[in-house]
Image 1 (cartoon, rainbow, N blue to C red):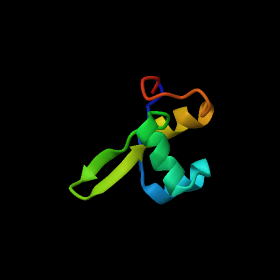
Image 2 (spheres, rainbow, N blue to C red; image 1 turned 90 degrees about the vertical axis):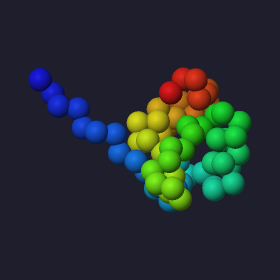
Image 3 (spheres, rainbow, N blue to C red; image 1 turned 45 degrees about the vertical axis):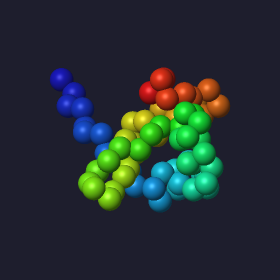
Image 4 (cartoon, rainbow, N blue to C red; image 1 turned 180 degrees about the vertical axis):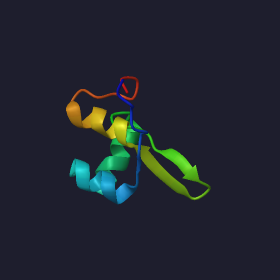
Length: 68
């Protein structure tokens, strides 16, 4: 049996590095529903699930929030 590792939370700079997007483009895509939404980590801290970013990276042209 294979143990599944927990989903990591990525902060903004890590997401920008992985995707190659600019900050403005990333937030524009979040608003349009073509990029995963952030999750709240703490009262003033947001991040993205690594699995959601990986889903987006597999098919960025046709990703929609309902997909992943």
